[in-house]
Image (cartoon, rainbow, N blue to C red; front, side, top):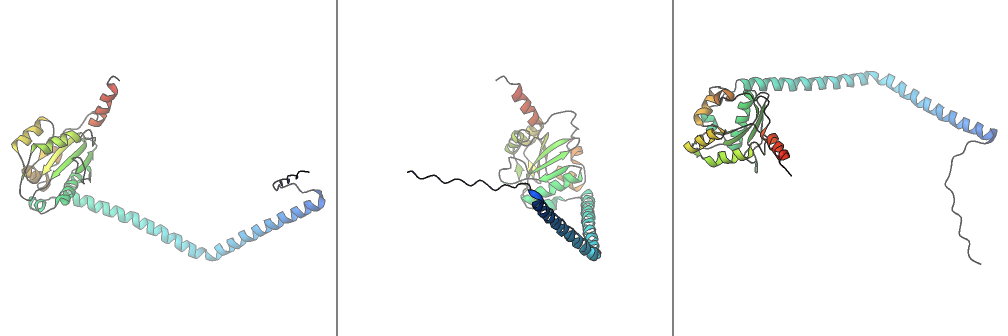
Length: 241
């Protein structure tokens, strides 16, 4: 005779109380649970009533600290804005900087002129050391060339910036800025291909004498123009497949 397979036990299930005794027991359990919960809530309320002065002091201290942080941040922003509004950097100061300090100084002078600028120069930056945005003038990408020997910047620097300013960085404007000089060929090539440049003489007018960059370079407000990146995307969409 074969062995009978064991029966599997069904899972436990809750069922409604049956009979008066079970109903009374369930009611007693529910009442006890409710009473215990009420006691816990009452105890917490009494504890809060005893500690409310401490809690009030902690809440006030937290609110005061938060308000102090907000006001302190506001004061720092105002002081920085006032400092940048009066910012003037001499050529001697530029000459004494290293490459990164030069980029940061250019960023600050752009902020002084009303641009929202950030320093982004690093390895593989594809021609962008500072990127700045202006509500009327659009996006500007800066290639900074710092020198301690008053060396000359040649055309290849402008070639590179021309190739990356719009397609890579989405810029409307591009400028090479140096505390040295540019070759004659670099200047004429830049003027023909809308790559602006600031050499040592222009840097003095801009950073030291306070002439705004848009006046120095005769930049005009963009009116309904799309960025080079957007134009490139539109051109790709319009090409036949």
